[in-house]
Structure formats: structure tokens, C-alpha cells
Length: 259
Image 1 (cartoon, one colour):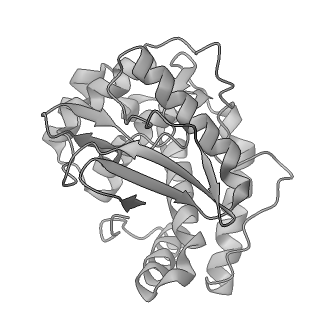
Image 2 (cartoon, helix red, strand yellow; image 1 turned 120 degrees about the vertical axis):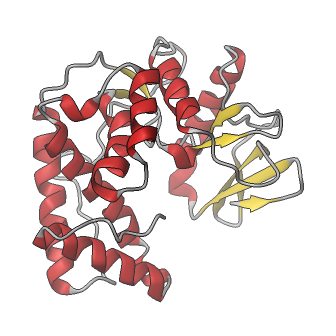
């Protein structure tokens, strides 16, 4: 992601395989703009753009500095998003956060052998177990990566939803699990913040019978994303190894770093 100037942001995907996702992001942004939902806006130009084997999308800047919205605003935006009907003119994928059984597993070459093998086993477990969870909320439009890090406070003071990469149709519990996990296991939200989230959204995911299993799965998803980046720096490698070891051994998650 690159700030072009105070008003514009450029997002560059690493190769052309990301084009379909980039096209969907732009269509989702146009839809949300059309209905007046406070989300990041795609610039009114023909996009995505292919350049030097990469895919580029252009966006309006939400704020000059990254200021995250209060947790009540996060809950309100997720609640309002979940009240929307599935758009008829966008082919949103069904939610499959771990892919389908038989899909190729990530190689994870920059992780230790024991942690790489363990993480791949847990991905396979999550693929099989996720569709069998006893979801109770209505299925519908979801953000797919809903958390405080993806809700910015605009320069005008309005909360704005960003990062539209993972929009899908599926279990809305997936959009609630990160906030619950951040509070319950990681300690990134206080008890008061989580109470506010529950009061505004109107549902406490931690009381649901499938919460513990879904929290385990969300940890795997978060850690897999980081594990793919393990070779980029010593810090990401160390964090990925720490997380996998904690999951494998049952250690505390309270020292996990935010990425």
C-alpha cells in the first residue's frame, strides 16, 4: 500500500492472479458508495490497472494519519453491514476461510519443520471442521476480516470500513470472532471495550457453543497469514514461530504482537 499524496492511496498486488479479487474489491466499493455505506472509496477511474505484471487499485484516503475508530463505531459498522442484503450484481464468494478440502496447502518454507507441519495439519482440520460448526446467526454479507484495525476514523470524525479484500457471503460469526478473541485470549481489548462492542452489535459471541472452536480457527488463520510472511524479516519470522509454538503447546497468547 502506498500513499500517493494526502488524498489518494495506491494498492499494489504482487501478481496478476490477484486481478479477480481486485475487480471484486472495486465493485464492492462502488456498491457501498451507491448505498451510502461508510467505506473506503475506489477512485472514479477505470480499474484495476495492470502494470509490470502487477495489479493496482486506486482509493481515496480516509485520513492523513491512521487513527482507529472507537470500538463502539467498529461494532456499529459491522452491525450495519450485516443488515444489508446480498447485492445482486456482485458475485460474492461463499465464505471459505481455509479453502476447500483438497486445495493445496501453503508451503511455509521459512518456518521450522515442526511448526510448519503442525500449522498445515491445523489448516486441514479447520477446512473440515469450519462448515460443521453450529452457526446460529443468519448468513449474509460479511467483511471477512472485521476488526478494529480495519475501521479508521476519517478526518471528518466518521468511522470508515477499509480493506474490502475478503468480502463474502457466509456465517456472520466470522466477523465477530476477532473482537472476541482480541479481548478473551490476546488482551488487546479491555473488558469495558468488549462490553461496549457487545452492547452496540447486540450479540455476545463468547456465549455461543461454537466460540472456542471458532477462536481456535481464527488463530490459525491469523498465524497462517503471518507464516506466509515469515521470510520477509526476522521480526515476522520470530512472531510466527512464537504464535505457532503457543498454539501447539497451549501457552498464553498474551505476548502476541499485533500485525
